[in-house]
Length: 322
Image 1 (spheres, one colour):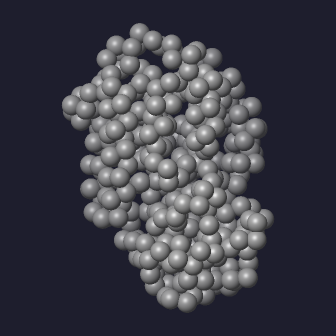
Image 2 (image 1 turned 180 degrees about the vertical axis):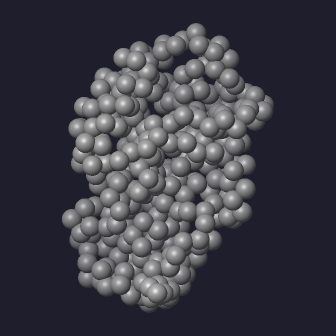
Image 3 (image 1 turned 90 degrees about the vertical axis):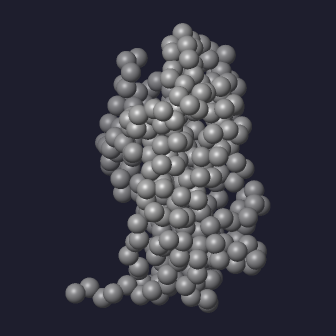
């Protein structure tokens, strides 16, 4: 199948279903890899964003080294933007459609190095399984092709690194977790049909009572802008999330907990809110790990419970329209 046909078919199928996807291009996804990510993050002047980016850079540097890359070559690269598949502009979610060449032993090596608390828009376990199933065949894809930083035969190592760069950089730079759709047969239209309901849920703006709290697994989103956002009416937000509403399995959703905490304590930082959520013990993640300030930010920004700027959650009333 010609290069790009799978993605083109996926995008056309999404458009027919009312999901408008655009081609993605970001200055923090460039040929300089994690060096470029840190450079762009520092240029924003957002201390919280820089901290998140540096955390991602540490993991990416480890992955690059494990894959046998030359950091001097990577750092000396040009800031040329890497081509990507799609971005859903309304939710700011990046989407990648992965054909069989993405499922290699090198990709598995990278996935094994992901932090335990990482939020992804796909199942980490499923991707590891697919890498194990396909690596024998996919490792040989373009076996002799040279890749900058990895030398001759390094194309699949480079692909695994760039995939990891996208996975870790997107949430670090304030986007929801990147969504990956496996299309092992190269049929983009079929891949969309198989994942239609999942995509619809992932790309929906705002919470719904009948759907699972996105923080519960691979469908999470951690969206944060590097610039201040407008405050919204907290009173209206908490009215839509009274403390009596419960989530999956009769547990409060993270959104409900945040609203309840802000109702009681007023303006707090995302870290303070996370600490209170964990101390209360009413909301728990499936893996029983602690709620992070990244997750709190994803809920406050995505659901409009409050405004976030520089790490602060501000329970301020939205000004009346003129």
